[in-house]
Image 1 (cartoon, rainbow, N blue to C red):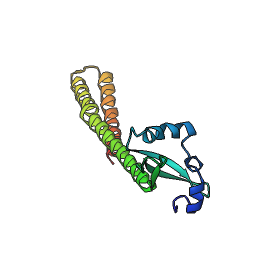
Image 2: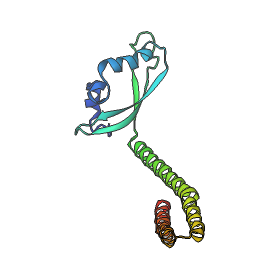
Image 3: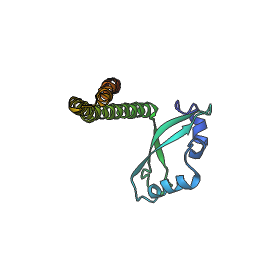
Image 4: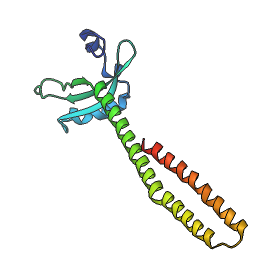
Length: 167
């Protein structure tokens, strides 16, 4: 009653489709048929209800058809529970899990950059330095020296990117 923003009398006069946002008449009939035919004891669904002010509320509806005797027509009894808070918590949990996955992926990329790319650049620089000491042509020695000098800021830039990923 409080959830729907309607009085008990209003709710008793209304059919379920007047407040159930997500269900059409045929869908509701398909949900209720196994209960009314006594093939199921109860059924629970998650849906949304429309309040009297037009806003919607996430709810869980537990439906049963109690056996009231042979002379009384089957009657559906429904217990409705507001699950808005649970849905919000689920969304926060999902966002936290995504954030954790992103952090783990960033950590993996940072490790890979450090363990492979920087090590290869470092090895390349050492190889170029060894080559530089064997080169006889002063112009080649000078060019190889510039290559080594260019590798140092590249390694620093990659390390800065790694620290950024880890942060």
